[in-house]
Image (cartoon, rainbow, N blue to C red):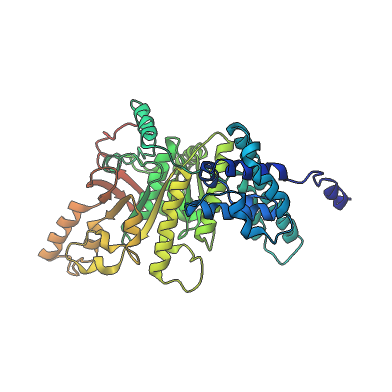
Length: 474
């Protein structure tokens, strides 16, 4: 019965318009200037008739070489084709039968639409065929189905206009709110970073133990509490562990909080349970999600992030920030890539994704051990592990540094000597302090700022946390 219903659902009319395809070719011969306009969005594969696809491809080659394109110059390449005589007669009379620009546009738009539908049908048919093969994993079926449906949302238009047109857009933006992401929870960091603009790739670097994950989760909580849609790809920690950290972070205030250790181990007492439940209710209201897909390749990342963006858009929300923790843990797209090649591939891909989807990507990156060899262990751009490409692709480099972590490792064994007292004084001076270093920022000045790191609560706050003068963001 199901097979019969499926057969009956097949369309009676093919997804093609042969006359529109031939008419479009004729219009381009009648006015060769149209070839450039059409070539920006149309490809040979968009033609359903093979010879028309071949003719279009040859027209592009000739026009690019500066040659006049007409039926006569095309004839030598297709003289042996069975369908060429009919096409030749139509194209020869193109100058007499050319339509208006409005007609040409109508043909063009319909050809693109029908081509997109054909690819969608072909993709879904492949999914149906794969679904019958029980050896194919469910995850692969879902990925293939998503790719097929994503064809409808593909943006094929070229993002190009005159500088004057872009200048007009800039002028019209004057006086309007700045579009972008900010945290609000870490005021001093917001000041040194500014608003994270769409298309930006922000790389957060630091050595192990510096608080990179705590920083990006605190940033995500602050941003999403302001209404920014945030998606975190957690490659190092499980979603369970990351969520426990977020609950501890949200419970933390100037008056204390619920220790992360208690939330991690499930030993929260009755007096603290209300605070945890209140934090959970706050999370319910945030447009914040965690993706813990294993074996995450760049292609899978792009596909899943785009899927989430469409889901948010369907709910009237907007995905503005995607966080990857961390960059070097993404799975290589193919075997044999060196660490340098892999890191370069990922950083370029993340930047291209941010630009294509008009959102901000924040990627955590490990730094090399060269940091440990210097007396001053504050990170530098050259410390980015595996690839200088990361530094090149990033719009913003943000390094985190905690003197406390390095000083802790030098604790004297004799707790009653003068060295220990001096060490204790130094520890008190840097306790819970974190430095935000910004050595690269394309859209503004570089700089640095101070903040507070509370490891026991997995929380990062701005420099004015204790004075409760944190800048208020509406």
